[in-house]
Length: 387
Image (tube, rainbow, N blue to C red; front, side, top):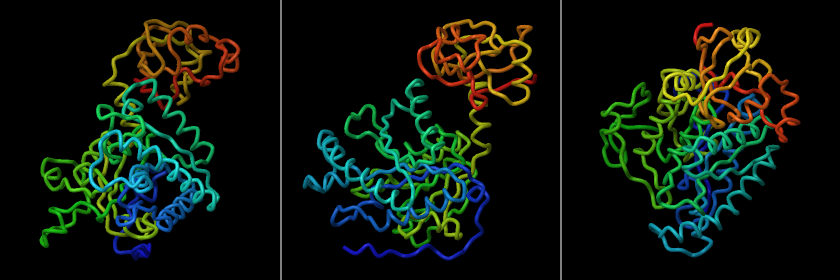
């Protein structure tokens, strides 16, 4: 079947600063866009156009993370499985076959454009359990720092019904929050949110901007997906709740054109969901007010001055560690006079933190036997009171 598709739409609306100023962008690509509905084959030409867009955004200094469905859709075609819902074990088998094809396609198409693609497979526990969350986040951060393009998918080969997301809309929102993305793009089969399903209601009106997800907005979202895609507009609105709570703006736009990300830059029809705050502020608010501290870190006057200047907390400035905390737990930061000056997420558990307290960062690997983070608490994982 021909892959002929429309080109990016001509400019029909102003491009929002939430797009032009976004530094880190997560893009969700669904199965219905990746796999041909009739043949089940990968739409290579279309995916290549997406990676053309990714290459252009990367050259412009932006960091891109892709959250891609498609493994089950490709695998079921290769295994000759019937259309329609599959039993869990057949879905897992299809995913194990399809993941190879999908990863190879991303690798080859990225390489042809001077990009390096990396595959990351996640389950629900990887974004819910603190230690696994931190490990996944650090992997993605490292890949981005090395100018690679992380391609994230749900690990359908091992995920059971109890630990699955079930759709990559919500997974992409979790990933966007995990990496403090400025913008989440959901490529859909329609160009945004409507007051009613536009396929069946000729009076449906397009909603260009959503500043709060109200019951009225939720009522506009339909449930329907395709046989290749579990997610409908309902899951996209639910993803919006997750993204906005994390301070990430979200945009729903059509993926049924070539170069769909360039189309956003050209002013194509979209629906923007705007967060009330930025990702860093949202994260710091979460650290300061929603996490129960598991311990305390006491610091000297020099470290206190460094924090006031916007620096991270290094082990050298730590004088004492109290409590029982693991890596990733929230801890209270106390100044030399004992007052609370902030809270943060510890990069080391208590036992290791005690061993490196007062030591230079360059000594960490010799003391602990492995190369950990230079900071005990990174400034991005810290919410300070007035110092």
